[in-house]
Image (tube, rainbow, N blue to C red; front, side, top):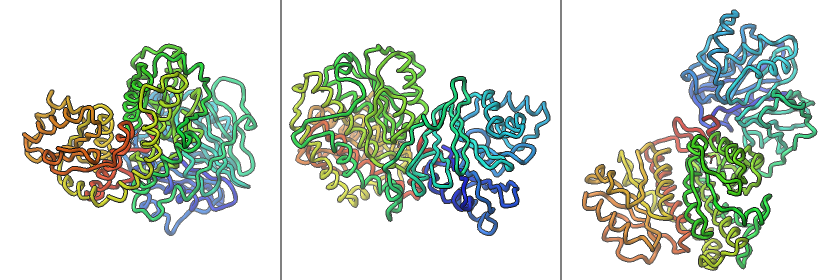
Length: 611
Ligand code: AGP
C-alpha cells in the first residue's frame, strides 16, 4: 500500500520526508516523490519511478529547502509506475498538491466533468482528480475547498493536501489509515505509527470522515461527512509504547528474520498478565462474561495469514467449547450474506487492524447485531477501535510484509481465548487443560530450540531452491499450518506452493506430483498421523521428495521421508505453533537463496487497505 508522510514546523522538510519514506518502504511501492514549499514560497516537486534510491539520487544535489512538505511512496492501482503517475499530483495552477493512499472509485466521471470545465490532466491516476477538484472549489481556504471536494468523492482514501500560499496541511481519511503525530512546534502526518516513532509517541488516529487542519502549532479536527463538527478535544490522543529500536533491523539483513527470532519473546509478551503460573487465564474483555456465555456460535474472519489462524481457531475452539465455529475469508464473508445471530461472537483477526476486507466484515457483523472481538497487533487500529472488544497480540511492530511473529501471537491468543471461554462456560474439562498450559508455558523455550537449528532448515531450503512447485500437506490442526507454510514460501520466494488437506490430495492434485516434486508433510497430530503417512506413501510412490515434520520420538517416519524434522514434543494444540517456525525459516532461506527481496516481495503490501 502507498506510504504517506507530511511535515510542518521549523525543520527542513525534505530530508525528514525522504527518511520517513524509507521507514514506510516496507509497505510496498513502485515510485516515490516529495513536494516542499520552499523559502521563496514556490512549490517544488521531485519524484521518480522505482525504488527510493532513484528519488534520493535525484535529490542528492538539489534537495528543495523549506519547512513544509509532503512525501509519498506509490503502490500502483490506477496507471503504471512512471514519473508522471508518481505522487504528489498537482492542479492546473501549480499551487495545490495532493498525495493519497486508496482508490477514488468515481474518478472517471469526476475527471470527465473537470476536463469539460477546462482542467488539464497529465497522469492516468485517480489521485490527480483530487488536485483539480480542490482547485475548482478553492477560494482562499484550503481546508474548506477540500471539504467541498470530498463531498463529491466516493471510495477509500487517506490523503494530504498542501497549498503553497497557506501555512498548513489538510489531511482526511475514509477507509484507509492515517495518523497525525504530535510534535513540539511541529506536527507530522503519516500512514502508520512506526514511520513517526523517531519523532513522537503521541498520535491522533483519524476516523473515517475526519478532515484535519495541521499547522506547526495547531491541529483542528473536523468532519467532511454529515454530522456534528468534531473538536480535537474529543479526539483521544494515543500514546504508543513501541520504540524506535523495535522498528529497526537491529543488524539483521532482513526484518523477517529479526521478527522470526523475536517469537519466543512475543509468545511470552502475549501470555504475560493473561496466563498465571498455575494456569488461570484472565482476559480484559469489554464484553461481559454473561454475554460470552450466551454465544451459540463463533465466527472467525480474516485474510491471508490471519485467516490461517482462524482455521486453527476453529479447530481448537470447537473442541474446547463444544460450539459450532466458522472460519471465513473476510472478502467472502462481507459479500456472502452470512447467517449471523445477534448472540453470536464474531472475531476479526488482523495484524494491522486496517485490512479493508476485514474491516468491512466487522461492519457486516455489527449490522447483523453480533458482538465483535478484534484480535490485532496495532494499538488504536481501525479494527481495534470499531470492535466491541479487542484482544491485542503483543508482537511489537511487524515490518516485513510476510507475517510471522504476529501469526504465532494470533495462535497464542486464540488458545488463551479458548481457555478463558471454556472456564467461564464451565466446560474446562473437555480437554487436558494442565498439559496445554504446560505446553504454552514451555513454548518460548521450545521455539528458542528451533531457532538454534536454522542451519538445518536452511539445508531444507537448499533442496527446493530450483523447484518451481512445492506442496504442503497437513490434517486436522496441521492443515492451517500447511496453508501458512505454502503462503510463506510462495509470497517471498515466488516458488509456486500449494497446501492441501492431506486426505484431499488424491482427489485431483496428486496428478501434479511427479519425480522429484517436493512435498512438505506436517504430521504433529498423533490422532491422524497414520492417515497422513498413507498420503506420504502415495506421493512417494510417484517419486516425490517428502520433508516430514513430526514430534520428536515419533517412530516409523524416516523410511518414508527424504528428510525428517523432529520438533520438541508438546501438547497437540501447541504443536502447530511449533511447526510454523521451521516453515517460516524454510521460506526465508529459499527466498534468500533465490535472491528475492525478502521484506518487500513484489506486488505485495504489508497492509491491504483497499479491496
Ligand atoms: C501474510 O504473510 C501476508 N502479509 C498477508 O496474507 C496478510 O496476512 C493479510 O494481508 C492480512 O493482513 P492483516 O493481518 O494485517 O489483516
